[in-house]
Length: 387
Image (cartoon, rainbow, N blue to C red; front, side, top):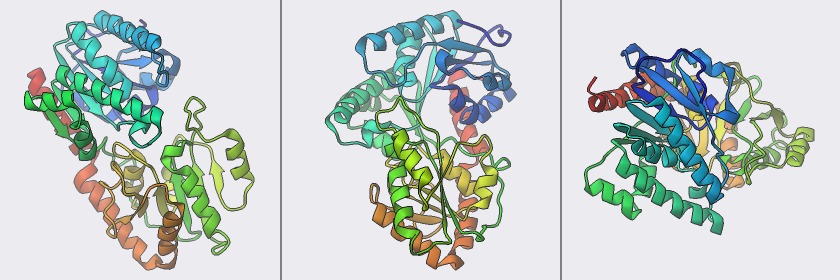
């Protein structure tokens, strides 16, 4: 256990994070809102993933051991007991767990450590719920069981879309927690900071399709690249840009040799992740994310906030922000030809795009403003903390 900042007299809310980046970019505004209400906040982040930037949140940071990808039962229990020890040492008034393993481990560790209140935020159910292979089906069943157990130990279970809540209600333990009256709430994703992602007029010169996603199969990157390959010969002046980080720890990660082949191609432009994506969004014409499943896609919300039409999959976490024909187009997942057809639709009807972009911004302002989303969660949390 290590402190990175001075320790407060009492930690009211301890965040259990899956990685430092998500704590900074996805929970940062929520942490600021809590601090403004006088709530003492701290966070546990994985030791392997520690980033100096996390100190800028101005809260105590503790380290714990987490392997997000391991399915080894021995490692599973080692991590659970390690987290239990860490939570006991911090001794918070409540814990806020988000992402798959922090929820599965965190709720159990918190109750075993005698923590009074537990809050969980499901930011997406994971790749197992988007795949159909035997291994994925087994992980899915185990995950439903674990989520059910966590729901019995949590005071509030937040979801970023109603599809995920419905999916987990198929589990016997989770449905039992419903019958026992345990609180479940659906919020509009993590929200987006409207001032950090300002509206701008759509750029048509050049016409750019932009996809920002991790280089994994479930994000639909293969479909995006294939759609670009199909369209480029017919529309040589159209640009297709794929921006994403490579994660070699995931079995579904795009092979490095494939990425290198794409870089050498003449139909798609591969770029490394940027710390500030706003200039790239503003230079784009249409944002594309052919994902197989999301919690609520942060990338889509950022693009919408900047006033971009969106093409995405008709799946949980994507079809919520995007209304077909209003601020973008929905396509079937895993279908590169359908994606290419939707992209061609926008190429041939550019007069529709400005209105779609304005509708994207309006929809974000009404439903996905981070201040509104955080206020909804905070009001529920504060009721339980009696603040």
